[in-house]
Length: 380
Image 1 (tube, rainbow, N blue to C red):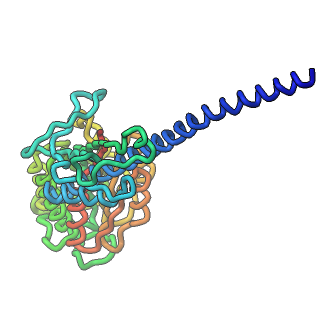
Image 2: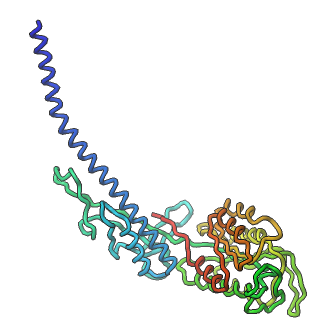
Image 3: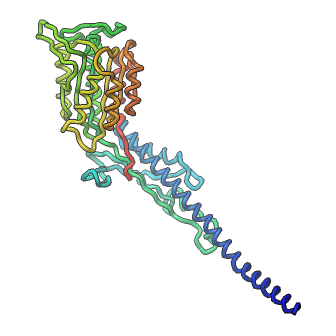
């Protein structure tokens, strides 16, 4: 009986050894393939990151330079700054396409259509690690035991330059009539025509530069003009000045000559009053959300002042309203006496940027920079 029990234990031990001998190679093969699968997933993620980065960089450069060759070079450079399977990502010039990205309605996805001329608002980057690509296919570790020694991942990404509806909200208070050499926010020239060396004349030139930049961009922007000071009236030899606190001088339009005409009107008739920045921002919101606003356009306000808020609603309170409606407010403070702290706060609340300009040249440069910095969205 003891001998029979001993034989049974030996039989079971032998069976387990046979099972282990069968299972261990299977487990080893599964582990090996798990390593290759993880490697493939990692490479695909790296390739997605590289193509996304290239598309964003290309679209951003396209918006700033309005030059396809420059944008293509930026996309290729951005791709090379990302490593895929341990090597810098290489894309060919033919992997970078330009075209039109659009969607028929709000619920549809953006659709990319290649184009070489005319309206160009998107850039598509194809990333390949294939036999025909510069970087070649990606080697595997263990799948080669079954005759598969590499895999060929491919990814694509499209970045779209979004259209903007823009409202310029300008300061027409008395201090804007000061000579450029004067520091402070006291009253300057009121009655027009305004001298060419006044702060308002510098603003007029900066807005001309802004509109010129927009005319060079591929998307067609709509622009509105709002102004603010305070209730102000004065008799001038060329006619009476009679301003409300704030108003929309020109609703959203693609005819930029209408905006220039309104600025010319100020230069001819004159300006004056106190500085109701919050009231002006409120009028900017009204203009940018009017029935002329486009549903797919990014809403942007450019708010400028040369002085200190001294009447009307607090600008930060109005900025909260803008943020709630997804309106980005970029702010500009002009001259040494301008309220940079408050303007910076307004920009931060809405996710915008604050710019400061000390000179007329600085002011024009700031407006140009805002015009060239178009919003970019990864749409594929």
